[in-house]
Length: 351
Image (cartoon, rainbow, N blue to C red):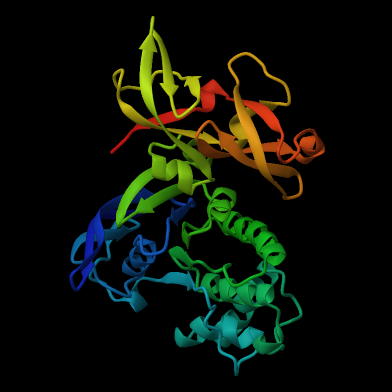
């Protein structure tokens, strides 16, 4: 039986419907991410699960218990927020031990559990330091330790890494995942960062406009998105408009000055469709080759291991990608030739 179950949640604020019939479950020990653009409802779900707000309808079950109408302080849930919400007048140890003191546990137990939490997040020896003297990454660890020290049934994370710089953020992603797996706690994470979701999650729930767009493991969601929105949100995809054609059983999408064969995935000849192809899924060469179309390079962007090439494919603007070692083969203003990997191409009927 799932450890966290969310059933048919609806929530409106005034005239604005924020959630519409949201249902999903999280297995014990699983790390599940709610991903989506700002305003899609992911933080509202987290607040309903935590008990900070109530749904208009629907239910939340934790460990098989219906907690929909249970006060937040009675749910035994650990939360880490974007701003960490640490007490600036307290030192590290006092911040971590706060929840244990509220529960009026014996001093010896508080000391033991707080010290263990310090060690878990690699802050041994820093218990006496003021939290205002810590780096952003260290403050995030204090917030995580404070959430875990109460031994919660469930851990909720609301974009806890968004305030960190890129390098520290990447480091903390790895440490957060290691701590979560070591403790084995069931975790629901909210982010709008696609790379973060792919890095951390066992499973991702992609949201759009208060509804679940797609739910899958990171690899499936990235390689087999079920809509143009999913293709473009989780890793930038080229979305090309064209027409589905069939000649002798061979299916092709014909666009503005280009045509590519596709694996048939529904629809009829003449349908207007949207072809989704990621930049790294183009085969690219400096010379013409079978099935390739001309691609005129207008701009190059070097980003370390990958060089992104922006240019014209017929009447469409597209992005392709090559490893940086090959970037000198493709000069701005020159023509290259591209062909998508057929197995990685997806198309969707135009709405």
